[in-house]
Length: 84
Figure 1 (cartoon, one colour):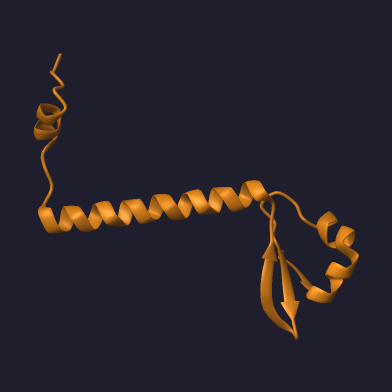
Figure 2 (tube, rainbow, N blue to C red):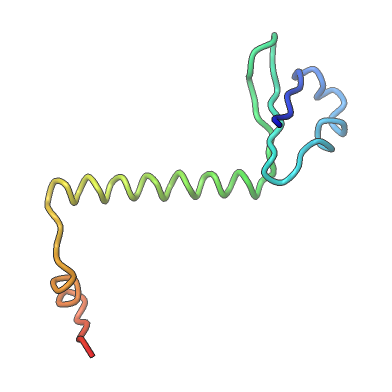
C-alpha cells in the first residue's frame, strides 16, 4: 500500500524517513495533490538504469525497422565467429 504524507511532514524529517523501505516510495502531497516522491538512492538508480535501457532498446528497434534486420549468419560473419 502506498505511503502518502503531506509535505508539511518534512518538518519532522525522521518521521518521514522511517517510513521508507526498499521498493516502497513515500509520496508527498502539497495542497492535497501529489507533488514529490522520496525513495532510496538504490531504487532511484535502478529506475534510471531501466529508463536508459528502454531508451536504447527503442532506438535499436527504430533502427532495425528502418534499416531491416540481419541474419544470425551475417552477425557471426561480421564478428568473425566460426561455427564449431
